[in-house]
Image 1: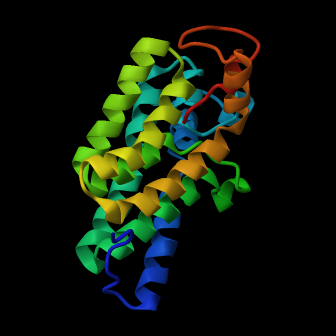
Image 2: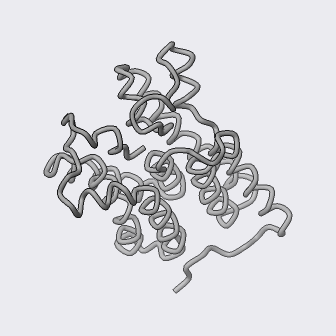
Image 3: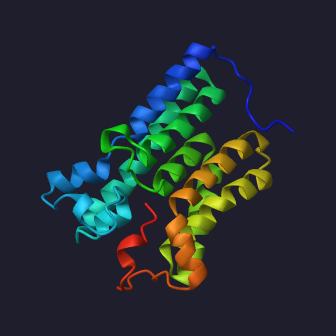
Length: 214
């Protein structure tokens, strides 16, 4: 079983795509949009995250939707560019570093988002049926349980399972790595899920400002 695509580029090229992926992933679209639209500083709102869920707490659904699309789009852009110029191995490296850039952007002292939208973007670009399956998983869990973070975690964790279903073992290692990163970024949400205190979608309580899955 091949868990990683053949490496067809030299080391320097792969390093270049790691840097490019990180740079693209680290663009804080949520903060940029919030400031452009006069919504305030995201660091002073809710969880302080740069993701779409926290942008929604500004009261602007438009800004939140744009953040979701752009955070996913930067992952797609990084992967597609790498695929077109340097092959599948470079694309996976770009995907991983785009996620790291989103979660730990150097420009924001390594305090970024939680990576769900960007992950969905990179898996859509790497193999669109996998991305669609993960998005569908999110929607089903959200409809049944009404908990955003739980939906995100299940959707992300399902990515490796869908790799098996779609016979794409070359994507399993990457999906496992990205899943581990997203779970780490959601560790506080996981603690509340285990305690039964994680708020549901639309619910307001003392913990609602920490329930972001962006």
